[in-house]
Image (cartoon, rainbow over all chains, first blue to last red):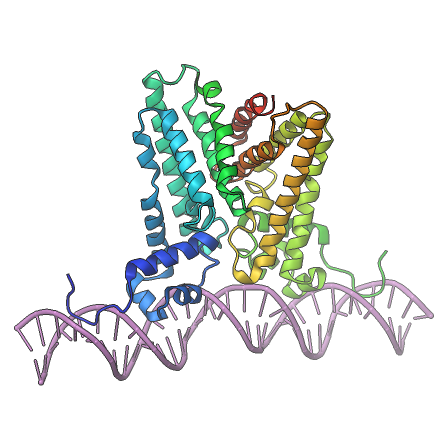
Length: 197
Length: 197
DNA sequence: CTAATTGTGCAACGTTCGATGCGGAATTAG
DNA sequence: CTAATTCCGCATCGAACGTTGCACAATTAG
């Protein structure tokens, strides 16, 4: 696999994981190249050689983050209700768990951006839109399958559960633990029958 | 009221309102002094003379924002349920309304901060904590008044409705209109009886 | 070996950041 | 009027920003 040239002096995957955690914790603009190189344990030049630019590094970090917990995987559940519950419960764990900064990177990492970095903000916004559409489609499918009543509104149900999901990121940032977030999920799921039947 | 010295050449209140809207829309660090002076129509020196520093200007902008829609006012409602409903409905309007940037300034304006600006992040976090305690106290009072069942957990109820409230800010940022947010509030309120009775 | 290729350390680039020194303009007080 | 006070335009400060040029190190290919 290795061609000619001097071999890289660090583990690219591990460096990327470090960068992901930093962006995840503080957001795109609040993390400087100096912060990154210090945490990754490499020089400025190595970062640019390996990742191209700050924005490209961020995009790769987001890809890594998403690959670990994509929304798509939950859509395969036998029922829409199961898909929603599994997603909410898994993320209640992840958002307040010990394996990363609190909250969701896609929700929190590009909330405050300067006009020059609109592309980064839009990247995450599009990921959220993609997830919203995915979830709505899953609910439409459930309706077609008779899981939801005729008067149920897939878009409205999606909005409600996404609102809860997004809110959990802020709560996690403010220090809520997994038990508290699971309680929030309990409450949110207790409306399911009212919303869809 | 006016003492000696050259009079200010601009309306301080209006300039503050402009700054508030800018911070509200993009967040503390993503708004530069240049952005501020351009939008406020004043020079750098005037900004510093009138407001002291960027951080002091931000704190004043937050005070102005909070004075318009403090959580405290909703606690006076006859029932806790009414307080929660009124707060959620008013903010569903405000978050997606035409009178300001989408979402809540207290939730969104200091999400991504550099280590040097932790004080700003903490300021908004403390405001959220204060609101949380206020709402919990209102629910405890309701429980003492018999409005809530014995098994109802004021802290858990607070967490649920704050999660919905916070999530609505992200939804507004992503383009949800007031009707959609009111639908989310409908769904959230339909859990009330399950949670507290 | 030489040639080619790639990674790294050092120093620096131009730009923007928040903030300020200074001198003059504009007002009130006496 | 003069003195005192406050505000403002201009120029600029040092620091930090993301990024890059360059020379050298370290490897593979032939």
